[in-house]
Length: 182
Image (cartoon, rainbow, N blue to C red; front, side, top):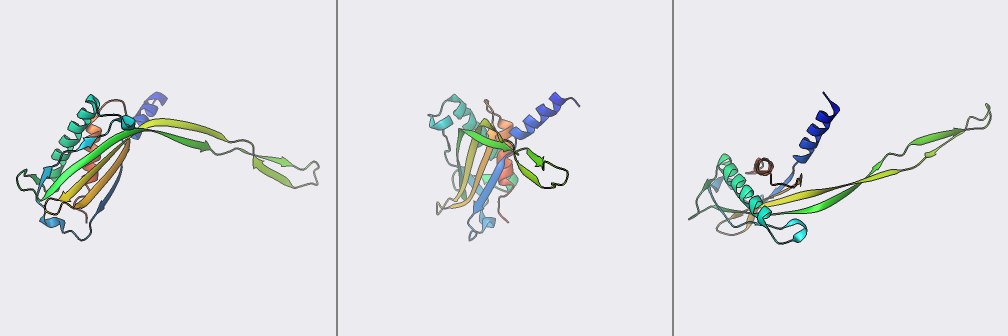
């Protein structure tokens, strides 16, 4: 396998790494929830800028992914009398990570064959930075009668310059793999 093919594959898999955290109200019996309705969600523009056409595409992809995933979790859509309301907030920002390479270590031995002492120490330290765009998606499921949040998913992943509906669908499905909580 060529080096460029391996690097391309690693770049693609790194872009789809989705970090998912969920939380829920442990006092809620999720077995009673069978229907849902979508509440309006929102997408914050990159670095807090007002939403534009790209954000509208992201909103459509998120809503489609949620509506495709919830039936797989035992929920059916009912806009008139839902058991739960589902909404989301998404955004993106530039992130910079600073990483350090381990320093090389060198040894200096004594000046004569009878001197067995050695001195070890770092020679220098190398640093580099990586800048990327991180997307964040927070999905809330709330009880439609009490309006209390009963389940929340918090997702982060590096994203590219274009809207990737497959990545959004994968991320939403990964989050709802933990719904209902066990």
